[in-house]
Structure formats: C-alpha cells, structure tokens
Length: 257
Image (cartoon, rainbow, N blue to C red):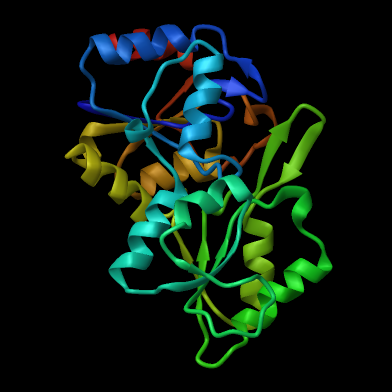
C-alpha cells in the first residue's frame, strides 16, 4: 500500500471531540511521507473551516489535503461550462461556488444545475419544493448531489444527511443525480488522480460501511472500517471491510503489520 484516503467526521472527531490518538496518527502519516488526502462528504463547512476545526483539536492539516464534494463539484461544473446554478447548501459551502452565477433558490430564472448539499434544519417543504420546481424547468438542469450519505451521528442522535433529499428530488423530477461525493466512484478517482496513486495501492479508512468501505471497494481500493462515529448504527452485513479497527489510532500499527 502506497497511499491513504481518510474520512474526517466520525474518524478523527465526533462532533467537537477528538478521537484519542487522532493527532498521533496524522503525525505518523507526515513522518512516513505517506501520500494522503482527507476525503469527506461534509458540506456544512468549507475547507477553511475544517482546517480551523482540526486545528482547534490539535490536528494540523492544510486545505490542499482536504477533498470535499463541493471542490469536486466546482471542477465538474467548470469542465462542462455550467455557470448558472441554484445551490442548496450551507452558507459556508457556498463560498466554494463564488465564481459561479448563483441563482436564488426558488427563483424563476433558468439554471444549468441544481446543487444539493446538507442543509440540515434548513430543509422544509417550501425549500424542497423550490428545488423541485427549478429541476422541472425546460431544458431540465443537472441535479448535482454533494455526496449520498444517508445519515450521520450528532451529539443528540442520528440526523438525516444529503441522500434522502437527493433521492426525493430525483424521484419527483425524473432527473438522475450526478453524485460528486462518496460513495461515487468518480469521487474516489478524483482523489487518486490528485495523489497520483493507483486504486490497488490505496487504502480508504472511514466509519461508514456504505459511503466509505463499499464505495472504496467498488472503486478498487481497500476499505477499512473504524469502530467510532456511526459504526454501531450501520450494520449492513453485505459489506465486508478489508479490516476493522477500534479507531484511527490503530492505523499505524495495522499499516506496519
């Protein structure tokens, strides 16, 4: 194995608590000169905010080491010259789309793409219906999903993530989503391209059996599951991780063995 992809939420921290040993593992990755990226489906924070959050926990990384669905989506939209977008994402994530012509959600102006991220409590019927109506324009715009994570673990329990809202909008509008986040193979391929790594030489570590482990394995990587974050709530027996670790702190020992 020559390269490493690692999730953030549920792996290095849970809510605002650092997973014990997470900072030591990052130090090992740097000392070992191991090509790596932190790949996350988080759309509630910008890369700058993620760097600050990690720094507050004593974990030092740079923005260039983080790949988010928003970053992948920006590249995808630019390649296809789709400039007018309606973005249903938190304000922090909206910063990543500052170079685009942002159309007000729910407006009647034509759009090239409707981008869906994790709005959390910002979702209500009116907002969801606005996105639906924009998808029903002619010609129909692209439906861009910033990941297809079903749920995540917060301090007060489980919360819906992006996928349920994407599925609802796709079902109602008939527009198949373009997924630019885990578990989409294209997202893992983007990470591998940035690292200059081959899939069979790369390990993905995460707490989500579907998005992290299955997604990585379908892209040709090894998928490792950690028993932190949402681990205890996701029991999809069909997915068999290549290894299961108690936490990210065990990764250096597993790697050396």
